Image (cartoon, rainbow, N blue to C red; front, side, top):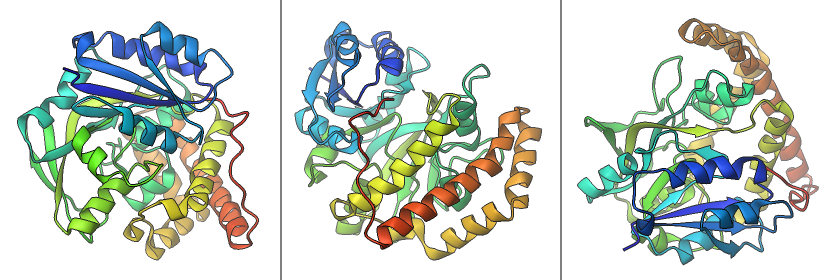
Length: 338
C-alpha cells in the first residue's frame, strides 16, 4: 500500500534535487510505502538522471510551471497522502515524514499538515537565513500577517486571528469562510489525496487557492494541522538576484494565470497593500523590525529586510503597471533553472 506520494515539480533543478531526494530516502519509512513523482518541465541538465538514481517516477509537464507540475502529480498519485515538496526543500530529520502524517492518521477531520517553521541553519545562504528568520519567502506576506511559518520577532506562525487547539506535537487550526487564511500550501505541505483529487478542477494547482475554493464553495470550516517541526527551504541561497527573479515570477504568474485561480481577495486587500507600501518606503518600520529581530537572533541578515521590502515594492509596481497597460508577458522558462 502506497501511503505517501511525494510530488516534486522540476525544471533544471540539478543544483538542489540531490539533497532533496536524499533527505526523502533516509526517512524511517518503508520504501514500498511511498512513491516519488518527479514532474519535469523539460530539464536539459542532470535533473532526470538524479531523479532516476532515487527510483523516482518521471512525468512530463508540458506547461512547465511548478503549479502545472503539481496538478499533473496529483492526478497521477497513488498514495493515501500527497506531499508537496519543492526541489529546494530538504527534510531535516529522518522522522520528519512520520511526524508530518501523524495528525492525519490521528484526526480524520484534518485535511492537511505542514511544518510551523523553516529550519534556520547558521552556515546557510544569506537569503535562506533571511526567509527562515521572518517565516516567509515574501516580505509582503510577513508585513501583511498572512505568513505561515514562525518568525523570530514575535515567535508566531501567523499574525492572523486563527482558532487553534494545541496538542503535544501539532496545532489543529480551524479555517473559516469569509476570513483571511495564511499562505498554506507549499514547502512540505501534505494533503489527504482524496481532498486534492476531489477538488482539483484545473490544470494548475495554486498553493493556497484550493483551500480557499473549498471553504468558499462549502461555506464550512476546514481543519488543518501545523506540526511542531521544521523544513529546510534553501530558497535563494545567497543570491539576491534570484530573490528578485522569484518575486517577479510570483506576481507575473499571478496575473498571467489569474483566470485559472480561485483567489481570496481578503488575502490582498487595499489596507494591506497601503500598509506594505508605507512600511517599505518609510524604511524606519522595516529597520525597526530588523533591529528587534537582531536582538532575538543576532544574525546580520536581518538588515536585508528593508532592502528586500523596497525591492519587492519596485518589482510589484513595475509588473502591475505592465499588466494594466497590457504589456505583461509570461515568464520565459526555456532557460529557467533552480
